[in-house]
Image (tube, rainbow, N blue to C red):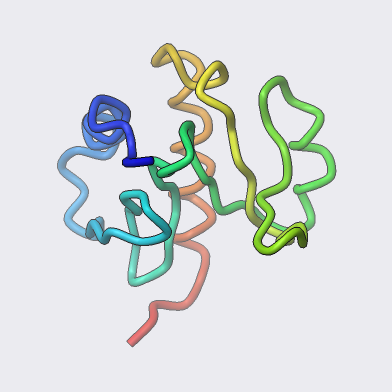
Length: 111
């Protein structure tokens, strides 16, 4: 499944004007990176993937439509998947984008 172009555009609008942001296709989606670190992505499976502080993961998965991001059946600490129903509106999407961008900014840049 291809990522949702409309969702990717909505993410772009929220981070518009930030010169540190780059885009890269990965995992069947479109990722938005800060200093080479993924912050948020329009997922190829629908919804968004969000990078978060691993210490916050347990609390964040209790939010509506959020769940751990799994790769090969294993939950990845510090990564969440937010289902499409959880990012339909700007009010729903914006906090996830802000959280992902803030966490990616806290990481050392990749070379």
